[in-house]
Structures are given as C-alpha cells and as structure tokens.
Image 1: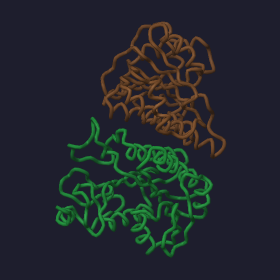
Image 2: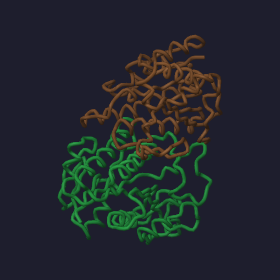
Image 3: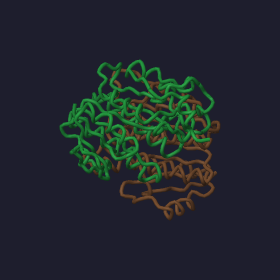
Image 4: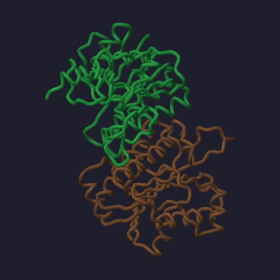
Length: 238
Length: 221
C-alpha cells in the first residue's frame, strides 16, 4: 500500500514512519525536510495545491500535522489544514485517511471529564476554548462531514501524552509509548472492516484505572500495547 | 444594556440594530469579521476591546450566512477562517470585556447532510455538507458552545432556514422579534441552547409574539 504521511518530521511522525516503512511504500510530507530515505514532498498543509499534489496516487494518507502555540496558525494548520487534506483525499480517490489529535476529553473546563472514569470515544467531546484542543476537535468534525458525505473512510486517532523510551513526561492514564502509537497508526491504515466510514479510537497504554478504556481499539483494530501503565509509572521521573 | 452586533448592515442586522436600539445601547461592527479583514494582531484586539468595552450581549451574525459555497481554494480558506478563527478571536475579546451572553444566528444548512424527507429537530446531531461555507457555519456553533462552557456565559444558537432570507419580509420581522427576545432573556451561566427556526416557526411566532425565544432547550451543560 502506498501511504502518505503528512507531518512526517514531527514527534509522532518519526516513529510512525519507522513502523509503516517496514510494511508499506511511503511518501513523506512536511513543511521542513526529514532525514528519512523515503521519498519526500515538501508540503505546507495550509496550501491546498500542495496537499492535492502530495495526495496524488496514494492509497492512504495520515495527517499528523499540528500547531499549538499561536491562534492564527493553530487554526490554519489544524482546521484549514485538515480540510485541505480531506478535500484533496476525496478528489484524488484516497481510500483511507487517518487523522490525529488530542483527546477532546482532556479539556479543563466546567463540565469536563477530569474526575470521571469509563471515558470512551462515545462521550460527547468537551474541549473547552483551549485553542489546541478546540481546533483539533473542529478538525474531527470536518473529518466526520467528509466521511459521511463524500464517502471517504476516515479513522481518527485520539492521543494525549506519548512517551519515548518508556519515559513519560507525565504519569497519566492517557499515556502511550511511541512504538505502540506507531503500531496503532499502521493498524488504522490497514484495518478493513470497520462499522462505519468514520471511526474514532483513543490510543493509550493498557491501564488498570478504567479512566480511559481502549477496548474499542483492541476490538476493532487489534491494538495490543506492549508498554502498560505500570511500566510508565515506574519509569516516570519523580 | 450594551449589545454588540456583527454584520450590522446585513439584511437582518439593520433591522435588528434598529429594534434593539429602542431599549438598549447598540454597537454595530461591520467589516471587521469579513474575508480580507486581515490577520489578527494585538493592536486589532485592543481596538476591538475598546468597542466591546463593558458589553452585556454579543449578537453574532456570521457573514457566511450571505455567501454561497466557495468556488475557489482561496475562497474556501477565507470562509473557514471567517467561520472559525475570526469568531474565536472575537469571542476572546468579548469574554475579556465581560460578555454575559451570546446570540449566534446560524443556519439550518448544518442539517443538509440528512435526506430532505427527514424531519430533523434540535436533538439530531448536525450533519453539514463538506463545503467551507456550511462547515464554517457549523464549526462556528461549536466555537460558541465551547466558549460558553469555558467562560460560563450563556449562548443561544438560532439555526435559521435559509428560505427566510428569500421570502416574505414579514418573516424577517418575526425573526428580529425572536432575536430581541433572545437578547433580553436570561438563560443560566454556561448554558448552550439551540433552536431551529423554520418558516412555519416564524409565522407562528409572529402571531404569538411574547413567548420565550429559548423554549426549545436541547443542550444544558
């Protein structure tokens, strides 16, 4: 399968490229060059023509692009960029789009899920007005619209904190090791029989707290994280 | 109270501004939230802050209501920016200035993804078509909803049937009345309400003016 990875030079992009490169033909895209041996197309996700060109002839596209720090650019990259990717994918006949973003349950605002357990993909998103969480949530809604109306198959991967070398910056149940995360993206590209054209999966480590279950990813993607919560907890800085 | 109205020279804005001005202090913003309005800057925020100083209610009439779906990639980008980022910046300033409630005049086009023969109510999940105009209007609703939740303001979204803009002028008069009642209502903090406003609703409302604008409560956060 020929897979386009947008945002390939980022923190999530690097492990995803490592994992997918073992199984698929890759085309990498980012606004900055990467040092990977795979074919690379310099692409600004906010420029529709560039995204359209990057999507040409690929079977699947993974959108890992993100910007958090400044409002205008956050909306440009996270909202308009997502629209550009989906629009281009629909136009170029891409069979699967995998979108990524933070869990909109992570927002800290009135009515949030801070003290809840069993928070699944089906819980109504409550991102609050945080520009990062909100823009990525808006992008998910764009994904839903394209999936339902343009008959694209779209998988949204929700993540929150990811760790490298099993060292988490925060000890949260919503942590996932980067290698496990990369496998989840590969599974999202490869999975055939999904219940609908738009599916959301939260991808975290296997944790005993019951706060944010990953049962759906286990059941439908066959996701089986190798690094569990106990491992992250023991390795986290005190 | 002080009411700030965007798109005040639009076909709805002019009449709504006149109606509100009978009992309130009205500030009309025109052109600040349209395509080509330019990039946001601290200076622009400060200037807007002066105009929004001490406001009680923000009435946002999205400029996308008067536009067709974009026909070029550049227009698409502008429509998405107007519907989301520019509204986010506007609400940010409004919150800083202490806004208590927000009225968002949206569109029933956010339900266009459902077959025409379906009867959709406020309880149905919106299903906008994937074009920048309808998505911009829908995403704008979500921006308002999340600001209301985060900052404990109240917000009402009126999803207006687009046939209202093309038909009988009395329908717009009835909509103005509905908007005035919404501005003067006092829903709870952090409450986001949605009401569908079709032609039939406005005909009935015109005949029974005085009912609460926010009678159809669908989402209480």
